[in-house]
Length: 280
Ligand SMILES: [Zn+2]
Ligand SMILES: [Zn+2]
Image 1: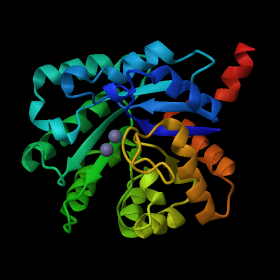
Image 2 (image 1 turned 180 degrees about the vertical axis):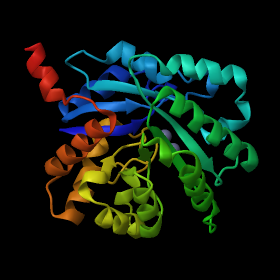
Image 3 (image 1 turned 60 degrees about the horizontal axis):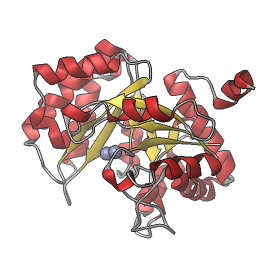
């Protein structure tokens, strides 16, 4: 069993075959995925909820939980009205996480000072909603300031909540991974761990304790080898598990079930097997 801890399947790239993509995931042993609720901005951040409402609970599809939040790209669109809308969506029973939120100094779609302010504000809202956070941190070219800013803001505004969270699509160094672990986070690895130039990510995946790691696709982005360059989909999370398994001397299946257990532990959820038995 595998859980894809992070995917965006609401976009129009899946409009013609979303049912098939999800059925294929289930057939490949993907028992659940977290539908990230950023949408195209605050007005559509209920996209994950809508997917969960449509697909969750049907045996031919994976289980689906959702998050809500404002991506750093759209930080400049946040205001009091979007805050209260997010809080309302956060009370939906399918919502288990707040995110993805954080800092993106690679694209700088929103000014960095606004990104930081909105990131802090959303940590406050997540605390009020009692939800773990999903963190996006992407540095610019050769500077590490996004990591320093992101980890400092988490240390100041989040760690004391004890709610924890996920550092998603980890691309940092062993040292960044250690700092995130010290702050109580799970580290989630994505398809780029299979890329030839990704040795620093593989080094981190060798260091992170097995009970602190998750796997994800970040679909539609970053499809792992051998699907690199294609549209990604949750079934491909097996390739991430296979790569980590190679590093850790585990089978892909063992890596999948260990990381799935971590996902359930973080969110206080019951494993799918229990649900399946209850339904039978
Ligand atoms: Zn991200
Ligand atoms: Zn994402």
